[in-house]
Length: 415
Ligand code: SF4
Image (cartoon, rainbow, N blue to C red):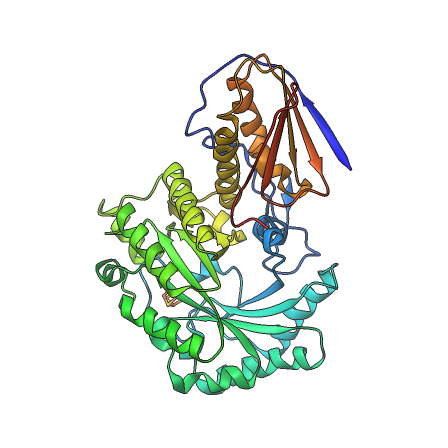
């Protein structure tokens, strides 16, 4: 079944690399509905309020990922503070110490809110170094999560931690309580970058951690940052290449944002740190998508999860923060691929009929239809028709002309 949208003709114009820019200022930040659980907070691309979960679905829909119930442990287990880290701003309003009452109500609110009961559900301990947490507290947290698995309300548990806190000794407790996935904050594979970021570990620690985790049958995730002090585009590519060698199941990419109360904020004030422009962050994230997808590695997040704390005056000092950075990256990838597809189509074509999966439609169109506008500038006298095709595979763009010629390409990593 197809739904078609006819696009009107327009004057020719140049397609700018930076056509993604300038949209952020049109996006109004609004708080989430009170009925939604903590952490369910975000923004639509058009400015209306939506949930962070909907926002995350930009990625999750590509991979049918589980519903993740995040529980932030607020730097518990961290031996010191990395220069970019301020969990009070990035985690949202979580208590410093989680009680059982708080934990249960947090999980229950997500379970009540979740409408898709067929979807797998995971409890995730984020925002600290889980395997560095005091063993008694660690076991408490895991046992509370495990009780939801026993009641068949939750399917699995994931944790995130530092690479140097993965040893043979701290894995049995994770296994005992059904932890299936361990995400590692690698951030970079360049020792100088890690040292300046005050990470307290080197790149070799990440390699070692991944070997241990894989040996013990855990699913693995790596976190990478783009735009760290002393890093470069080449350095980031090196980190991507090392990531590909390690073959994690998933990767999260976080372009660096400067938050108040961090050592990086001081670097910024002294003029020692220059944050990335949004356009550069989009380009690096696109590069990451291209390389990692080609290697069969799933990217499950691009950019920070927005929190109400980020809206407060002076909380975010600088950096490529955007309410829908992942969508910017994906719509830019869709645009590039569409232009490649149109290489074979002459500019005097009377009609272009695009066909895509319904679920790719928003990324194909781009924020505020910017991709469609850019295509119209290239084909000013052409009738553009965009059809959503329920039977079409994700990531496949097809285009047909009035003469019956048709062209198709597939974007890796979207399925
Ligand atoms: S290890 Fe992670 S949670 Fe802990 S201070 Fe560093 S970035 Fe923050």
